[in-house]
Image (cartoon, rainbow, N blue to C red):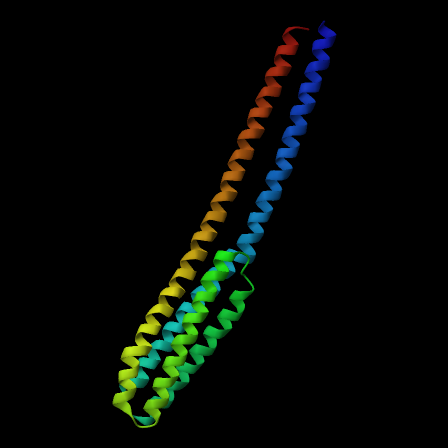
Length: 204
């Protein structure tokens, strides 16, 4: 009878250890996956979308300055800064594309690109009209087309940035939960094995 109890106890202990080993393996694999996603998706996404937000705002501010003056020298400076900031936004967009791994992220980015194309098209049209000497007409196009397009463009940039911040936070929290669950499971199984050993010692 005692021999049978010992065998069953050893088998139970073996199954428990096998379970905790399997659980630990899958838990570590999950944590590694989430960590990889944070390093290669969430953090770069925050950096590149944040950089794009900064440069698109800089480009727009200098566009406003470009339309606010008729001084040729100043217009050259403002246009140069506007074009450099626009090019910087393009670089940030190209870098961001390498961090897209899911459909929601891709849809948000595609929407941002579409709104950016509309904004730049309207902006360039207004600048061309201004350069042709038709200042009042250019300002009218700016108010009616450029500003609304920029508002949509800027809001789309905000949405993408907020998505990446929330995504990074969610992935970080999932790692914390996985660590907590693993720690609890190890403690519970360890306690059960200790109690099993204690009870076996009493009935020897």
